[in-house]
Image (cartoon, rainbow, N blue to C red; front, top):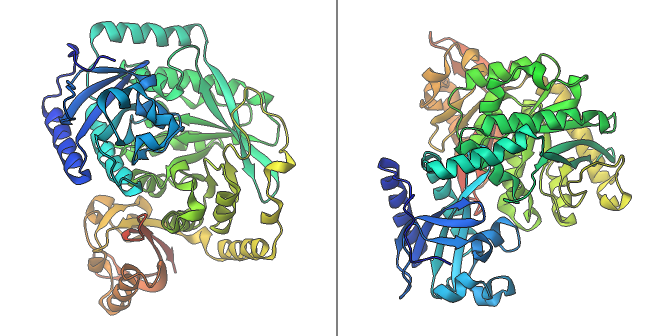
Length: 532
């Protein structure tokens, strides 16, 4: 463990470095931890890029390196421990780690920093020499800061030698077709069948984690090339899948706008789903929509991944109107004991239904989570409970993988009947509208809603809904809003009149759902309009 030697190839962040340092100062102060650092993953080594604070008598310099296997980060990334540990000596997985013993660390919180593709490129870690009362709230706060830092860290340059090594390694995989595909089943619980498979890339040698390969490729300008190589490899295997199933492949916006549909199109395009992997804000939705429309025109379906993981995923749903919305595994896992997660999935479920999208829950591992998700409107699932990724899928679903008590019960049947009637009567007319702040300010507005009011998205973004509501309907709208803010309701539906630029009214049904944090506090509203 090299914690006292400086790494001479440390990136010069200039302006971004100052911002990251401020984020770390905020993180250390708010969490009351002794030290906070941002690290970058370089193969099997963790490099501490920026450090804030002190850790007793231990000297930790920026640029210090730690074998990844000796770090808390490897345990967190591998899913062997939670992102937060109040006392490392209480867990056998952490008490004997060389990092804890050498530095005297007793408590830590560590969260991933992700590239735009979703690949883990580093970690934001807070540590203390004393046990601390850290929990999910601490983790969520650090994750918010890590998401803010991710854009800055993507600009960190890689030195010439590292760049050449990475390009050579990734180039060999592409040129010699060394990448393989594993398939994970996506299960339609209501009809007791495998609906499709997600294609997941597997690589030879180190690093073992596929997301690190994609992060490395993006860092040296080969990100799109590696993505498209993986996509072509996956599509070529579609003929080996059961004929009544679909194949879901992951592509970033950068890859989608750069590829010709003919390069990826299978014989039957309706069996292909393009899963948008993007955790940052998309700069040009018009360009991305145009790229997706070229695939949609041939019958390909579009999915938005990691719904609930952040604001960006909700924006994608509004702007892109996907056919499939996938609930992030961080939301699905443990949902049976977390009312806040349940409220969030309820909101996502409403958003998906009003958009006419199918809802899929990822990362389902516990029957209790499966049961809770089913009651919240989810009927399609993916996770270890149903099957791990494998080189060749088997047709059909093991009976033991489906808890029988969730199928065919009166509650399940009545819910499906209710949803079917609601969809028939309403959903075909729904217009996805906006994400609205608690004070009524529109954070994101869809093109369709703007056009419905005879405006542009630029004209509406940043305006308050109160300005666009007919004065005679405003009091009722505000009262419904207040009920949600006070916890008396999770959403509302009302008929109201909006105002066009010339002052003329246009009538519609408004359906608004409040999105809450893990403590139940309201964050913002997701709304839909049903033209009358």
